[in-house]
Image 1 (cartoon, rainbow, N blue to C red):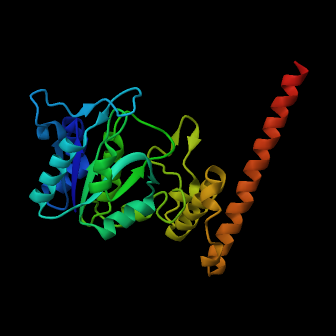
Image 2 (cartoon, one colour):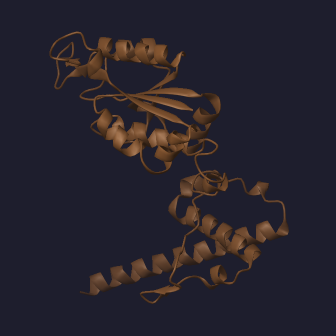
Image 3 (cartoon, one colour):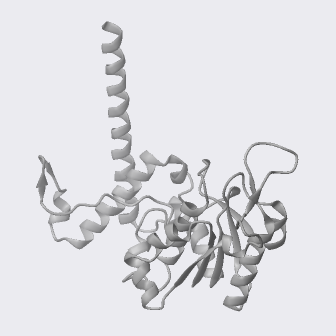
Length: 270
């Protein structure tokens, strides 16, 4: 997997992408992440990459030509026209399933980081294959979204993480949130690790983790839970774990409602 990032701030991106897990994966040849300074492809002494928007308005717009020259250089260097993505609030929302799709379909991605009021639409029309958004919010530039997309995709490339389970059991892989995690010591500030995790009984641990994953998704992300297909559970054991999760989640909701009502009552009395 090769990912090229077109940016005005390559040093900021390199500082994150060349260390830790992704840094070691690059050293071992599993992935290649390269940044490219868009200013290097300007044709003026000032290395200007932006100008006022046609039609008036605040701010500036990144010009098409420096972006195109940078993009064309990357394609020539890589020997292929990489699947080009512009990080934009106007794109489809980036999710774990989108990360899997991009990893499986392409071995070369080009990520374009915008700034100011955005980039000239003509570059998008000519060179961009799709736009991706990190969600319903806006940041000052495309570098943080580009790093997030790169990290999410590259960690699924074989060899980057020690085992496939390192990402297949995490949140969102199967449409569920991950179960709670604990480490030593057994007790901290009066809070104990659940006994089942200390039991050494692998089957019971697996059931507990599945139940907690169900509960956490039901309580925190009902939108995700609404998409979960319960029909995929075939065995009595699986269905029992789900039933227990539903009962415990309902009990937690009831306790939260009761607490809220008691709080409202106390406020009214005061």
